[in-house]
Length: 337
Image (cartoon, rainbow, N blue to C red):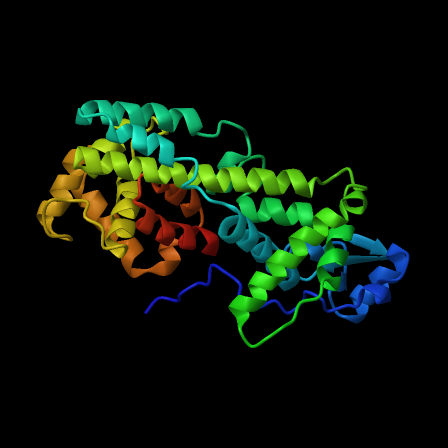
């Protein structure tokens, strides 16, 4: 049985770990408290690039030493922010309801598809950060988590706010996470003047972009799903609505089949896997059926091959073609690479 990789963090063990008064009046005092609570750890300048205990690569200099924030601390802050933006604040249905009501007034199925296609193009983000949010990466940043963590590690004021924000901790991790999110983010805004002292990071712009990308990313998936429903064939969507003009390789088709199969989604008209299924995929994507089969057998049986070096780009390329449920399997794999 394959290892299940957690995609979320439920503990809130670092929030409120230090009393606000104990942080003192200077960053020098605060850094000493971070060291006492083992929140930052001294490392050699070379070690920061290789030690997997650390998520960030930006050293914090203190008393002629180099310090890095703990990886689990940064992960916790990231997932608390993620929970706030995606679970508490954002509502991606509110912006799409009017368009779907308009869609109901269109009788011709072909015109419905054309309407949705135009809406899809209208809301698709074209700025440089969206590929990072979707996991395609850009400018040396692999994914959105890396981007967010690079920002929060650049703001010591933000870190101080998190570790001094008090919650009424209980045995219910979900309630702890809700309280952490609803207290931490407002605390950032209350201390905006201090947080904005660092010109290298704009956490407020980051949170706005995060919400915008999350909303549009989910709206785009809803639109594609509706087009699929209207067309009655996923294959039509793949050929017509791909944002990448390059066709899929046999290996990429195998990834597509794997994730759709894991999600128990219908993607061929015959039993899968079977020789008829390989033939149908070959005809749809115009790649060799045997190569699809061989690739599928490898990635479905061996996790280390599926998540091997260079495979992230293959997964990213097929993600835009997957149904929402299948997409979650691909995203989980991508995080694990």
